[in-house]
Picture 1 (cartoon, rainbow, N blue to C red):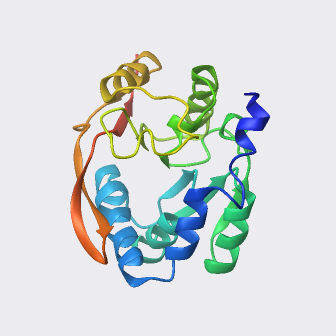
Picture 2 (cartoon, helix red, strand yellow):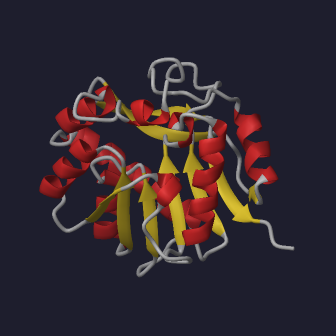
Length: 217
């Protein structure tokens, strides 16, 4: 499959977008994302009011919304799915959204204190594309930490569920991959998180949690 054809799958018919669009108004869904925005991102990264971050693969912008509203930070979202961003503009009109590829970030060097992504790296069409994307996130990140949450082989409930999961690697493989590219993992790869299940919030285990620190010479 060509790269352009691969990215074309992320449109108004993409299943993840349709599910999120349907769930956004529901209270359990909103509570889940509020909790996850702080337990997975705000506290692990040590963010504080005034922090400037880039959320890659932001989708509708839910994480950005909660981080900005309750964490008092400046969060800008980027995604290739224009349908998701258009819906995000309507739902969260105070957020800034960008429709662009991670491999070609439309920002100057060192534009953000940190960069985050959730369920992005497993979607790149090739490892080589992922490498270019990581170089770009490195370029725009002026801080020495980043956070990437990836669906890995150990996430057996999800890894084979989405046909756009192109890069299927283990949690340890990604850890070594980041290390080879100048970023070491500074927190456990496994982490409990809150998820909705039949209108209840339950704790589940996340296997691909990469809180990264830049390696300096």
